[in-house]
Length: 216
Ligand SMILES: [Zn+2]
Image (cartoon, rainbow, N blue to C red; front, side, top):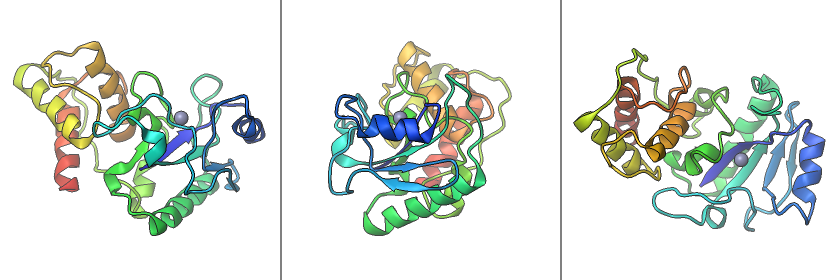
């Protein structure tokens, strides 16, 4: 897996200090600053501590099966903003480079939020997944337009099944329960960023259908 994060700190230098601190308990393989500078922090063959409690395709030890990239952005807590073009170009090139060395399926190029819904929201809805996809990195389909129609009954079960089969840690309960709202929020941040509210709606279902069809 290739897992993308934002730093959520005031500066890339502060993030670098934290990620190098033995006391912090966190680390990652690469750090990308806003100018596009890339720092390798951990060798790709080694396990870094970037994912934490997480699940994808039923597997919970994400750190043992992933490369983690921290992309500097202050984050939602202290000034979330668009990722500059130079930074995105560096992220694209770095991802392409990593994918040339590792057999990572497009569906396993993910946001931290995808594997830790409800706990993490990075790199967030401003991250340019379409740009990555256009460069051959990860999955993306044009999202269906949101029209406010909420999912219930069989449609909600279908949505939950689609997300579960795709990899998300969700049960097909047929209810818009708390776990479903958290996973829906993560799905929206990645694949339907125009409206992030954690509410499963028809646009989410249509987008998930497109995504699964494209992934087949
Ligand atoms: Zn993260």
